[in-house]
Image (cartoon, rainbow, N blue to C red; front, side, top):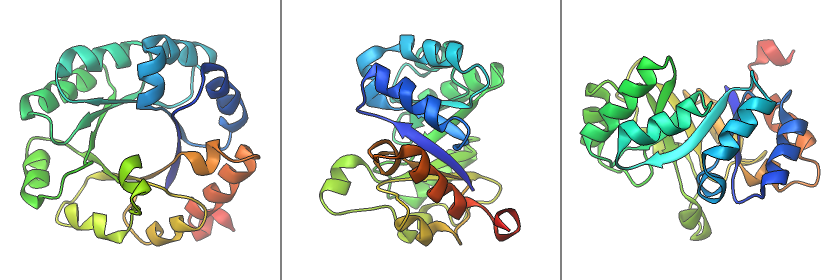
Length: 213
């Protein structure tokens, strides 16, 4: 299980300070939607320039203009870009087409999706990486990512699954026996007084028994 840290609702300098601390501990860094809306593609380009080999996800949450917005982020230096599962299939196909042409990845965010037939439709359209996601507002209402999310993807084979939504050192335990490729953690790391230590503690739980000793 890989660990992806989400940098969101942070100032420019704080993003770079955190990446400097975390680059050797996490597997991927996500430039969050709020940060992208604040600073645009400039921050994606600057992160890529400062950290040239760091796996980088641009959480664009694309809903329309798929080709244009995917190119924006991927040509700026991101290795992967997100597109919303409720977007038109034409948009989702365009995002995947751009990612494939550039040798990069498209991740379908299933925020708000509850219909199994929609997920099957997306898989049938060639989507192979899904993010099970409980958003910030739902978290504020008391909801968190849990095992029930996996009902959406249980019938699917040969897909990658990311999971996000209020995950921390305690709640990550509920995903350790699930088919999770990447666990996405935000404030449990970025809001910690010791972000590197927090990331190390979560990372140790992501490792398989053979890796952790």
